[in-house]
Length: 115
Image (spheres, one colour):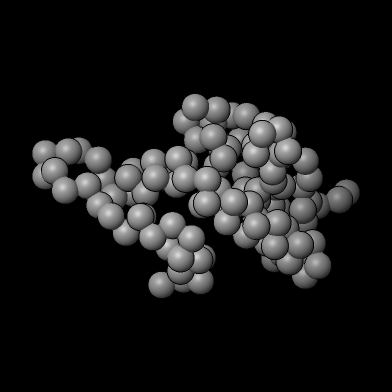
């Protein structure tokens, strides 16, 4: 178990519950994603983890020839806004999921090559 998984399970023990209907086509991954998107505690833990990861990447950098993108959603947490890291430029908002998957914009490219 990774430290991230442990943190998330401590914050949200209901994630251990699984659908029990064998006829339900929902996979465990889909269930966890759905539970995560609807859990305020998990979103808050993800925000904290994201902020720490952004600070680590800024301080120590990333592998040569790699780029990470810091994206920002201005509507997260009642318009307080929140950031997250992604390996590509295609916005996938972890705070709103499918309901507003593309809400957000690139705020920073970390490790971008300069010519």
